[in-house]
Amino acid sequence: MRIKSLVVAAVLSSASALAWAEDASIQLRSFVKNVQAATGEFTQQVFSAQGEAQAAQQGEFAFHRQGQFRWEVLRPYEQLVLSDGQFVYQYDPDLMQVTQRGVDEAIGTSPAAILFGSRRIDDAFNLTDLPDRDGMQWLRAQPRTSDAGFEYVDIGFKDNLPTALELRDTFGQTTRISLRALQPQESIAAERFHFVVPEGVDLVRMP
Image 1 (tube, rainbow, N blue to C red):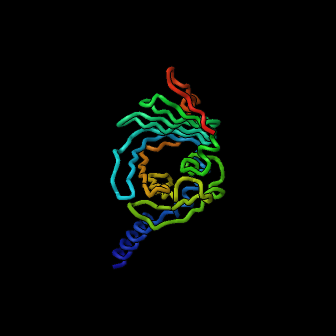
Image 2 (cartoon, rainbow, N blue to C red):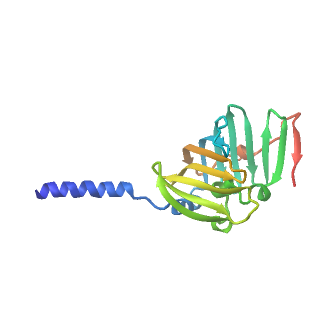
């Protein structure tokens, strides 16, 4: 009986350890502090306020926590959002157009600032831990300003890495993003964050 009791206790202890995980807000702060660069893949899909889904997009991302990031849609069409630390470029090959904004104006309190930025998260967002679901620990980040362009973004963490985002914008649309194969890096080649306007493409500088 004593052996059986010890076995049961060990099983319960293991199950408890597996079930326990730090709050998502703690994991987010740890991620921002300790992961200075990373690469990965993503899938994103936009849902209207009525629940109608647009075509899913797939691509790759990279970031270096000096305000540099690369978010590149590869399928079903190509699109690129890139920050070199000074400017943010949004390139749409189909439109043959690039828009350029200052990095502070473009990122500011955007969702990109949460995962890729270098400023203190709590300066720009109110963070609230949410109940666990889908095997992840969740938090909600709400911008402190009213001009952010979105109401909130929920971020799901697993094993101290972000794996899912759900953003609700001011029009009632929800963008769901799944992050895969996220690999922290010691450094990333500077060329990944360098943008040259292709020949024949219009450059629109935004204030």
